[in-house]
Length: 367
Ligand code: PHE
Image 1 (cartoon, rainbow, N blue to C red):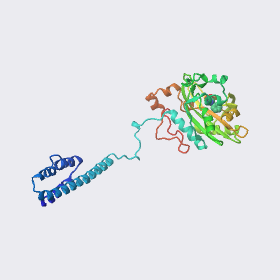
Image 2: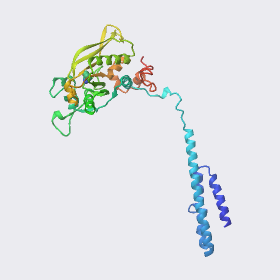
Image 3: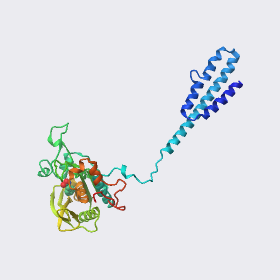
Image 4: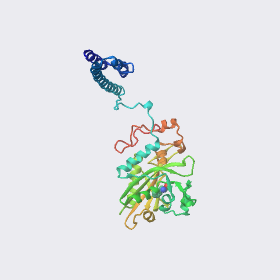
């Protein structure tokens, strides 16, 4: 028995001194493997007398379980040590400045998106969303454009067949504007409503200022006493904040949209020369958005009583805003995924647009 005790002490000491998982496994095989030391001793039990066998067998069983126990304890210890070593090896200091040479750039459309959300967010607007693939009800009918309405021709629509119906009126569209989000919002909540809905829009058009996919931000405010004066004040504050100017001349021209009445287009003052476009000064005007008071039929289609509520809506092209603010001449280049273009016009990902920290203070490399 004595040598079993001695053997145990030696083995446990050896196990506890193992420096890594591999060494520990070698010890396990040498002791408990098919030809291991304890295994061999157990095999030899057969040659002993019944009395000796009993005593030796019991001793070996205890030895085996204690050795197994020590192996497990040491295994856990080594695993923890290895994990700690890895953690301290792979430690990163998140307070270190970024490395510009390996940094990606924020696309101007994403940048403008963030700027617009920051400005309207501070005015108390919530961000709403709707699907890119719309039914004709939300994209047209509910916006006071029933089938065969001539205004449907104002937009070159991409239609998508409906697999469940061959009736053209049942076909889907990729939304031609963000205005269907007005209806989806009214369906979900009662006034007061104050939302903006930025997102992708689609029309069959392609030249220097049009791409088949582009971006808009819709705005919608509905309450009991909302007026055109509120619309003008809100949009004036928006363009001043957006172009980062203290003053900016604006004018509203009467216009037509089926879903607003009255309707207007907003222009901002600018100076156009052969080589330059300067916003906020000069005798020229630049159209930047469409707007108006929500048509009673639209409120009705959204489940809101036009005798009780009224409101305004507007729609701005995000890509167009980016072209104007950052002097990018051709819209098609936005979506060509040319990394040199993105390096030139893109934004530092660590500079978040905010009303307190500055919208675009470290703006596009172009400026
Ligand atoms: N949906 C219009 C367009 O795409 C813009 C608009 C939105 C006009 C809301 C008025 C009110 O041209």
